[in-house]
Image (cartoon, rainbow, N blue to C red; front, side):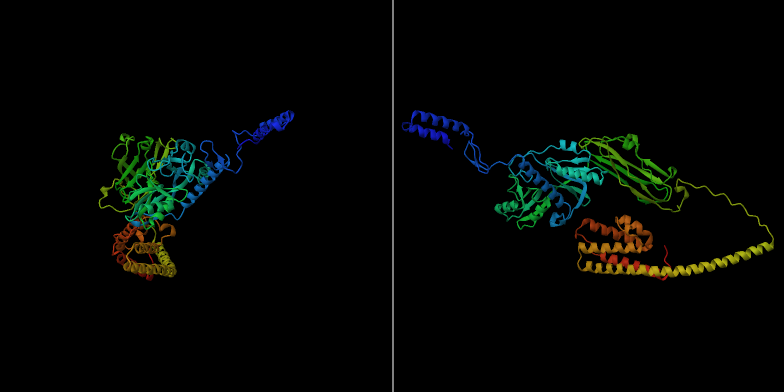
Length: 584
């Protein structure tokens, strides 16, 4: 834009013949002062709200935002992404697994999957295909949050900006809430979500999906579908039928995007990519027998597996303690196949075997064995602790066929001293009279007590039989449904009905009806008739195996009939007990 005072001065110069010399000097001085006070033509002032023309190419660009509004807007988007991802991973999580089966993972808060913001990327927290992005460094983050985590897993090849962190085992609820508040306010953290537990294994869902297209799907339909769900494929694998695609995490979670893709007619299979969460140290302690008789040798195995970056402290082996709880030192014996001083703690796995003998009857437990180690890649490199699970063991009282078969021997009792007969015949007769009178009175009291106890017990037994009758009818209905429609839901229903019936039959409380089939059978074994115990144990094992597989494949067809036969036998046994006093 031209300078107006300069243009006016030029116009007046053309008309100098019409103006006197004094007037020309005054006007020239006025316009010179006005020109000095005007903005320079080389530095134009951009009007607010209008577009600014760049000097190089003359391209029109939108006005830039202020230095304060731009960071505030980006931070608000990051916090909204953080809240949305955390909420989406709390409940109703599911996806299609192999062969189209629905997988419902359990939410696990022992591990947290943390996604850091990349230094270069899109506004929604990811870099589209073809753009340059730089993975963040976890060193500063680990130092800042070392107090909250014991160790972490980071696979740069799978997820360069994501890592899974294991929380400290002694973390309180208040410390966890403080950690989540800090992560939400940290501008380096894009989002956080818990890990998944699938079939007793932990996984971290990543931002990628394994995708298999149908042969009839063309590239135009594939690109439109990926764009609709907010996903993109790598350029080198975009043409193949089976490849991986990445998702924009702040638009849709990985399991939601995978479900939308799997439901499309052009997709054969779509499931999230999962990273197994295997801790750097794994410990295991097993007993070959969970029950025995006094003096029986029970073999045990103690194993420690660890990665190269882990160092096991020698005090773990030096202070190894397998003493059962609640027993005196002279009533058990522990033997190691190899001396503990010869164990090499620097090579994985560390395997210790031997046997333990317990000479006292009762129920005991081998306490959790502590294992101390240091992890060079952990957020804090101090000594850490992991423990094995507590193992129960039951020692039952049985008389051996040969006394020499046990190491614990009991001495023969001393003979009782002989009692000399003294007193007159009258005193003997008087004593006999008192004894007979006492026996008669005791008999009368015992008879009356038995009569009242029997009536009260019959009422209780009648109520218990009514409850058993209701569960008996439920089992018959479930068995008929399983015969007509043999499937996983029907077999699972008959298994649940059987466990409720057996728990009611054994008078178990509500807090004693869970656990595996082995622990559940131990609690009901003494209440079952001897002829039914083997059948009940086999049925409980088969039902647990069916539920663990979670599939309708290879279902035993005779299971409903076996369940009905067992229940009919137990019901007949319970009815007979209802007619006579019930024995415990």
